[in-house]
Length: 213
Ligand SMILES: Nc1ncnc2c1ncn2[C@@H]1O[C@H](COP(=O)(O)OP(=O)(O)O)[C@@H](O)[C@H]1O
Ligand SMILES: [Mg+2]
Image (tube, rainbow, N blue to C red; front, side):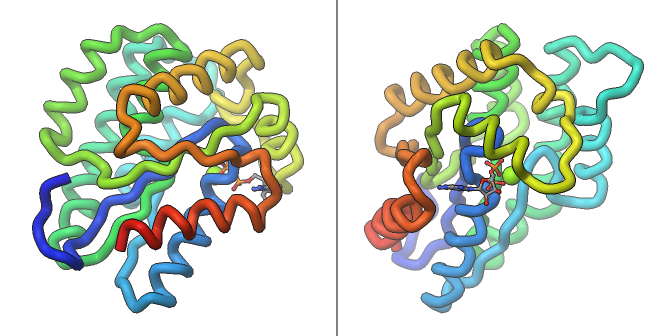
């Protein structure tokens, strides 16, 4: 929030349930910034670096071993720590804008609201892992659960991971958790009606970016 200068690198995150359009909007944001000669690095969580992608595999694969919500949360923050140290902070320091598909708001929504992990504990981990670094802007792509899941299931070649295999009630809690966060932090978190057609979503996104550069 507090990096100075008119063209200081910004940290933008994309959030929302499966199929909301995060990956699609990440590409739109990346292209728009590039067209405006702003250096940009697109990345995602969990993962984003070779080592953090290995943690992603552990946390997403549907293996035979049990992962409790607390363990899942620790893995998310472990991956995030690796990602911050090796990609996000160095890129911002070089002056590149970082556009990240999911960040700590996803942990708040999925592990906190979705799985019932203690919210205060999540904030303690967030402080330990990224201190005062917060996204400058978060685009929350909001869609009804049925719409998001239908889109996610229509995506070619994806076999359901540990989250995609969850029931609708889980995603209702996640969606509600995201909207509560947006209500608490309306300046940082911008809610986009992502059920609209893509041209309309793109228009909403670009309007926000224009107010931001
Ligand atoms: N606004 C939209 N309207 C219709 N389809 C969309 C829209 N946004 C994304 N899609 C499609 O829905 C699917 C899921 O989008 P994606 O960006 O992969 O979502 P996420 O990364 O949030 O899971 C993709 O096939 C994408 O092309
Ligand atoms: Mg995606």
